[in-house]
Length: 117
Image 1 (cartoon, rainbow, N blue to C red):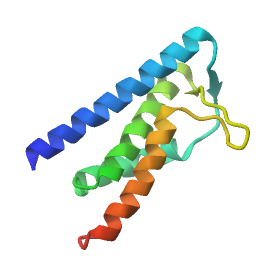
Image 2 (image 1 turned 180 degrees about the vertical axis):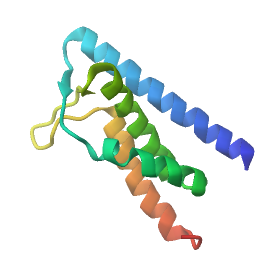
Image 3 (image 1 turned 120 degrees about the vertical axis):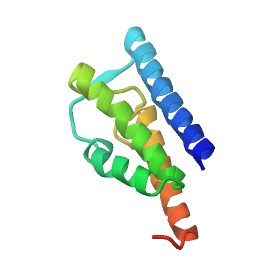
């Protein structure tokens, strides 16, 4: 169990680094902008971290926490979240937002398989 939890932490840390690196590159190139709005990843961060430790086997929670922490780092550094992906039919977003959304989907898949919650 400890090896699995350690592997998840490495993946979470890697996703946070990848997100921060991608934002750095897009900011350097002038293709990113600052989003001062509030995202669900930012609002849900503290309860998610508590849930990650209560239900460590849920990959979706780990992913949501990784995306939330990555966007929180932006808020602490820039006072806003750095977005660099813009599609005509969606609000602008970033890698951390994708990770959060994948985490939500994965969480509900895990929840459907689990009998502990």
